[in-house]
Length: 156
Image (cartoon, rainbow, N blue to C red):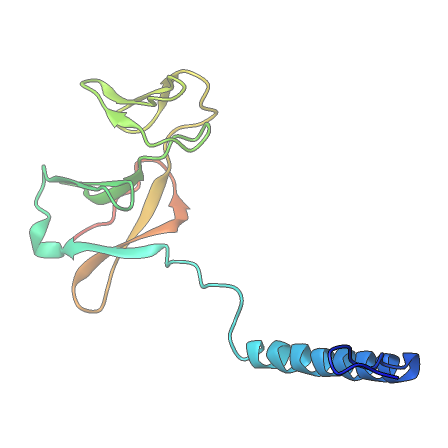
């Protein structure tokens, strides 16, 4: 005789039937969540390597502008405008300006004003970057495009 306080035990077949229904429900729910996530990309787009540094009228010979957020140094001379990366070619540290040029604070590489290696473990000089003119008249630096050392973009 059963007691009101003790429920009747669930038969094994009923338990297995309920367990299989719960498993199927969880599988369907997991699949629905997975399908809902397909619409949203799981890879975030990379930031553009091209950025504006200012209008052409802002760059007169002798102007040096450091874009700290991009770690780029833009120089204007009588030859035109050039951009140089301030990232050390050894292990990617940001170089510091010195009286003679640049120095890597992490590993001691030394570069002259044009980015040539004077000493240290850096395998090559600082990278010179492509400079171009946008349609609105501003100068654009492309960190993804390297140019030969000493190449200036002519301003006309």
